[in-house]
Length: 297
Image (tube, rainbow, N blue to C red; front, side, top):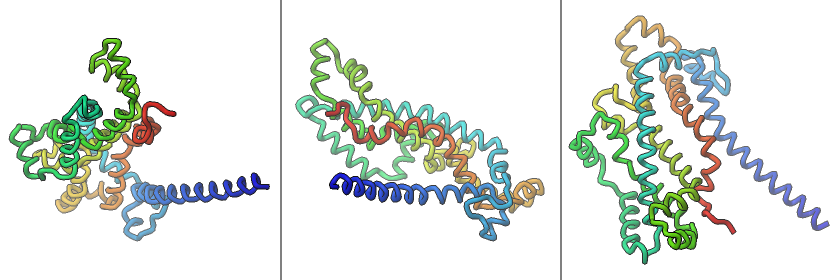
């Protein structure tokens, strides 16, 4: 009888948990589905507020207008270049910073000072103008390095990897030292192979951060042809309005079924497609990279 009661109680709680998870999932998916429907709906249907979870008067003109422009592909290539350069730079710097900071105080006496310094820098920065002047004076304006170097050391990710390294038993390092391994060997042959979940996590952070960044592209690029994708998409609605004001007949014909709402919806889905393709391969490491050490039990 007791086992039956416990079983029924467990079923009840599991039902509540699954219901809560389903409710949260639906709450997150409904706005996304609505945005997708909006991006494929006509301008008139949007103005009349007739769009729900399905497209009304299906049209792809919003996507056609966004994609049928060489500036879009130029911006996409710049974002791709930024990711291909920025993510490896971030991961290398995270490892080089996180590894020494994971050592005990008797091995690295200044560890607490550097950790405190990094926490202060993470919470308080010098502001926009000093950052801009540094980038400008070093000649990085209108280059991809202006989008990569200012954020080359993501402190939060360094702390995540540092804590993961600290969870690796010291006995592994001591055994390697007895076998004649130096610090480079210990890092590359012991710590990094054991830290794949955490490395995947910080790589995902860096990838999403670089791909979604838009403000630095606006302030560090004087020419629109040097904008990354997200910066370009931010200015797309403004350029659409300018074309409407010029009264060019060809542009007006292209924009008959396009307004700000379905343009913005199309922008969102265009920009998240690469992340949607990559994220499933890294998602399985995400939770483990933040919470699990290298040895269980």
